[in-house]
Length: 538
Image (cartoon, rainbow, N blue to C red):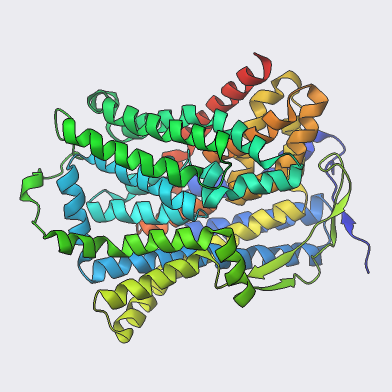
């Protein structure tokens, strides 16, 4: 067996220049997307090329290892991430093709024609439910597509779905990020759940207000503050209670259901003084919406009901284990598996990094989405030929976006296996008394690089714990802060932005979406930093 290649975290001798060079691939990607408006797939390929060049020429990573990391990342980008995007849009296409989404739209309008209330209901409440059941890009795809169907413009639909998908992320996919964090830090999972549950409720209350402010401005926000307060407090209070007493698995599902019920109850006794619409939008009274029989409305919502049930079932540990037993296929990535050695101080003990590609085609969330589409199409009267034609049209629609996702995930994997992420992380960890402030920003960076709060926790969770012990901060607090800060990075990670762009038909405007959300992401991450600093020192 060949000796693993040890990662070099100070390739230029000292930390600051090494960290600056390690950040070059991310800078290239963000500059091409946000400044020069380069098309997403071209920017992703350029960022990937920069990552390979820095890893090989500066960090000393052997070329075969770098190319193997590219392959591993691209495969992961296509499955499970691309698989989720493709099939989520397939479900949406079926509802459009059968005319059922018009009924869904009219039923939402009958609840509230006001765009602000629709935004709270779809982007925050329903998106949180999907995040709790599935995660990994599914809620952004579903929420953005639903907002488009309701008549939102593409850019606000994408950007607002990304902002709304923040508060629930740490407990997404039945608590997977917290469970993974406990695995790498060896801290008790319920204590981590409780700590994150103390950090995030403040932001669960803040995000509904933030959403309305971004979309409609301060004056319009003042008209709907009761709805924002009810949604935020009901979600945050439930998130806090469940995370303290029952662990991480059902936090988001419980909180989202309570927030949906609370908003619907509020609307029985309160309405905004005026109906807010987008500038230039033609007024349309709720009473003018096409009337539908209750049975017809239930039939129209059936795909989303099937989706919710299947995603919940797919997330249950026993169900996932059974499905994996029927279909799981794994293989070590050639030239990469245990060929990279991650060393202290990033980890407590030097450890060869695993590189195993998992093809869990039956237990993947994307498969639940595919089954939702097939069942819904059949129950709505679509034959096999129509289903196949719809699926093919969806595949053609997302082909360039799948390339973008593959290239961006490949960039993240080269950054990880090349040790570039650890170099940047060490720079954050060397901030002394300010470490408590920068701790969640490290989690934010981890999600921005990897596209997943789970991956960020695996990547930086142990580093947070080690650094916290060195500077005299609670390791439990710092590890939890990695997850809490990471949720704010979810809105700017390449995977989520591309998913939002695909769901809203903005294949060439990914840079516009990034600019729409970037400063909100950074501002919210800094607020998490302030909260953690206060918790650490006072």
